[in-house]
Image (tube, rainbow, N blue to C red):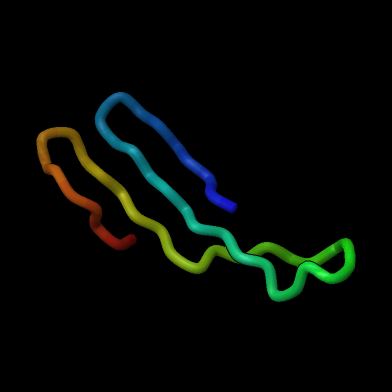
Length: 46
């Protein structure tokens, strides 16, 4: 699962994970977050 936030000068991407998928109701947590800034190519960990 991935969540994205797009702003005029920044893109943020959060990678969300589940501890299990065998039954409903698993809590999603953010495993990693990255941003790309305007005029600064590449991903930077948040």
